[in-house]
Every structure is written in structure tokens, then in C-alpha cells.
Length: 84
Length: 232
Image (tube, rainbow over all chains, first blue to last red; front, side, top):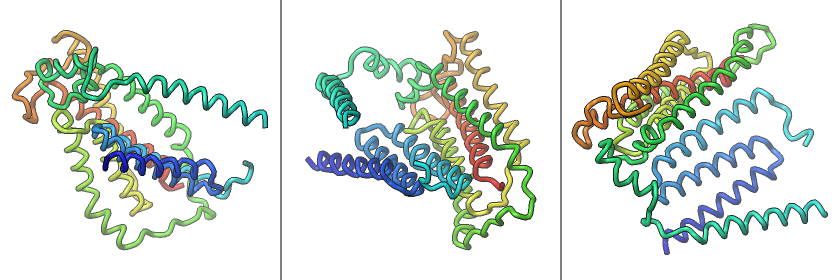
């Protein structure tokens, strides 16, 4: 029961972060939202008993890919949702 | 309007497909087919308590080799696209980066070696505990990232990185081919003695393979981070 509630809460947070990533006007907050979603996915993997996948998701998905997106953003600065 | 209806219809169709698949899944704990085979055989055959590692490195080792080559291609492409532009800064109009704060610099000094050691721990113990080459390599690369955040002018020693990456990449393939020659197949890890279950030096060549994968992934990701985030 407790884990079920936890699953639903994590799922709702993920859904919220994903919607924010799609609909956000600022690219920076979209990138952060994707990172938050990855972090919660990794918690979900851990709860479901897949620590290997959870580690990969936390390190690559939430950590490195967010940072790489941020670097790419800083290289293309000033193009915040102008033409889309 | 009609577009939205089509999109919603497609979504409903995929949801229906997904739900009809999910409804047929058995309760966890009831493995059959190839999954049950891996669980039954991995400790007896390969002596690796972490079954995921046995599957990733040995039974499905060729997939891992493919993943490593994909990552290598990505790193090579990024350095080809961005590596040359990194060098030719030096014009006056390049924005000088603000120096990092004292807290970040001290924290990086203290934490970076610990993080590197933790990454090495993860890939050395890949056959015993959760984790492995990819995870350990990513952790090592995150230490490099921390150093870059703290010291924007920090430069990696490319000679060392290139040599390390080449040696580990070649080593992986050499171990794989040696499995073909000395054991029963490509990437067979029963090349070395299997040892005692739970020891660090056990499970044949799995620790060796995970070490080279960890070094390769770590150096490649560090190179990507430097190319993307290094000085312009």
C-alpha cells in the first residue's frame, strides 16, 4: 500500500516534470525539468529492484546529459524560444 | 482541430496496445525462458553473484561491445565538430569566465579524488554489487565535470587520455578474441579461473572487462565534457 502510494506520487511528479519540459517557454527550465524527471525515474527503478539501471539513469540521465544540455545551451545562448 | 483528433486517436490506439500487453504480464518472481536460464546458470557457470553483470558482460557481451563503439563514435564526432574551435580562442572579445566561488573550489579539491575512487570501486566490484563499467565510468567523468566547474581553465592531458582510451578499447577486443581462442566463444569470461564466489578476483575476466570498459567510458565522457564545456 505504502509503495503503491509512493509509485503514484513519483509517477505524478514525473508527469508534471515532463509536461513542464514540453510546455516551458524557457529552455533552461525545460532542461532542468528533464533532469528532474530522470532523477525520479531512477528512484522508481531503485524501488522496482533494478539498482544497476537506477545507477545508470541517475549518473547519465539526470547528471551528465543535463549538464551536456546546459553546455549546449550556453554555447547557443540568447536563442530562448524565439523561433518556436 | 482535425489534427488534434488524429493525434488523440493515435495516442488512444497506442495506449490500448500497451495496456493489452501489460495485462498479460505475470507477477514478478515467475521467470521463464531465457531469464530463468540466466538466473539458474550464471553463478554456476560464471561465478558472478550479480546476474545483471553476467548477462551484460558475457551472455550478451557483444551488445556491450556495440554500446562501447557507439559511445566512441559519439565522442569522436563531438571532438571532430568542436575540438578544433576550442583551440582558436584568444581574441579579445571572448567573454572572460567568472572565477568559481571559494566553496566550489574547496569542495572540488576535497571531493574529486573521492569521486574518482568511488567510480573505480563501482567498476571493480561490478561482478559483486550493482553497477559496472558504464556506471563507474560515468561517476569518474562526473569528477572531471566538477573540476571543470571549479577551475574553468583546467586542461586535461590529452596524451594520457588518448593512450588510456586506446589501450582499454584494444584490450577489450583482445580479451574478447582470447575468449574465442582459449575458451568456448567470443567474450567468454571463463578464460581465467573462476575463483571463489564473492571474491574481488573471481568470475574469470569479468572484472578485467569491466575495468577496461570503465576506463574507456570515463575517458570518453571526460573528453566530451571538455570539448563541450571547455574554454571557447
